[in-house]
Image 1 (cartoon, helix red, strand yellow):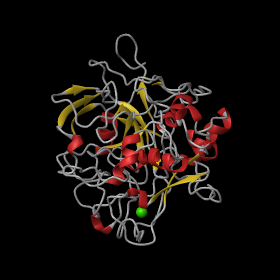
Image 2 (cartoon, helix red, strand yellow; image 1 turned 45 degrees about the vertical axis):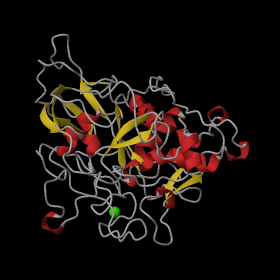
Image 3 (tube, protein in one colour; image 1 turned 90 degrees about the vertical axis):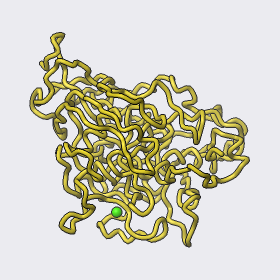
Length: 402
Ligand SMILES: [Ca+2]
């Protein structure tokens, strides 16, 4: 049985999801896709058509393409990673763009042999050209500048289009987003509805809904952004979203086959290295790492490439469509499949998310490990979903950085 979705009437009739043999996808790992569920819950009945039901649908153009980065550094703002086998990418092609780190090209083993990560198999060899990557997740301060200069409204701030929800009562078509809301008592870990609540008025400016704001959270990662919102920001910034392969390579920080992005020991020297969950999930977050929800970016040490929060804090959107599993054999600068297919929610276009969030833990959701994968409907964000951007070096026709 598929998990219910606003776009899956048969699943809605069937009710909440039940664990089934082989259902190894931790619910936290797909929590963002549950934005679809939350939106259905508030919108109510009616056959649903996705705003993004066509996987080949063009991404909405950003209102303004403000090339703040591309004008000032040797980078390419195209939506495609560079792919020139002869190009020297070990060394940075120039000074680092503000806030970015150079990720030298190289070869690594992509994927995970962890028994719960069946969609991250087979482990295969991937070779990448070098690229720049944001050292941090995009912050509220950065996203505010984008919104101020462009007037952009995120999907969570827009009323759902009645055409997408035929039969839904108009009064239910309200803007909002999914907010993690700890239940009062013990609940089944099979029922994420118990801790995800669709909150009208929740959006990036109001992370917990009306009455909440960004005061003191200027340097926290922006949340409640869907893939379309992330693309709009990236284009404005003259950057792009990382491919899934780029994200994993960068997360591993030059380490090979390590469990965490910093090594094999969870708390080396007793120090916290990630903002995730401590205590019984989802009712008792002891926040021993100092942060019950998002943390300011860079609150924990960087990985070997100088990148922070490549595990935990918030999920990060990647450019690739989601499909379980990888093609076998070595790959060069892979860009993912041509379309999406999530067997758990057929017909709902999903993109890859990586890195896990402040809700992950080794006791429940280990998808903050570097080889683990997440996924989300392209038009759905949540209170634990953000992103960061990358940039490829510009190259001459000879394949050399200029
Ligand atoms: Ca935490």
